[in-house]
Length: 170
Image 1 (tube, rainbow, N blue to C red):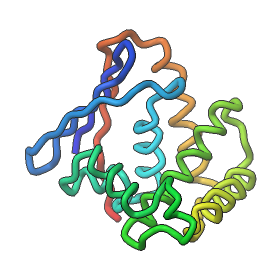
Image 2 (cartoon, one colour):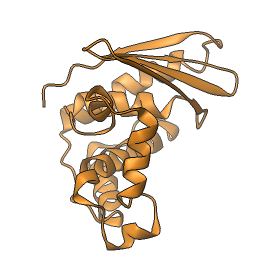
Image 3 (tube, rainbow, N blue to C red):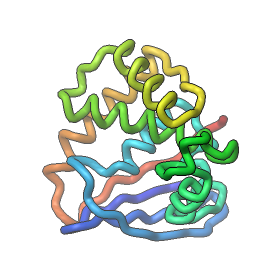
């Protein structure tokens, strides 16, 4: 699957072309120095999460539909107080991991692997899902990718794009 994120003035555009040739487009507002869904790409690729956000999109769901599935399953709602529906556990876990890497990036991108793992464990516990194990090597790879992104994306002009190829085997 090829995903293109194009920078806009107030919102960015996502265009997805799946392996079967089907495509989907959507927009999302700016929420920080880099696109949140790009952080998902780096995290989910490094951790080979074929059943999280981007894998679900690759399987045929619209990105906005994935958000609705997560919402209906108890993610980010009062229903979460009893735990997430089993069908969205991986989506919730991926979101918690992404949030940890965004926080790391905003604080300079030098958080230790153990501190990131502790934050992931706390986020997963708060969301009532099992924690996700993340190796030192995966943490280093994600931090490196995000440091590269934060050096180029904020300086890019509206209309410039990032292109990601989704190749996950899990």
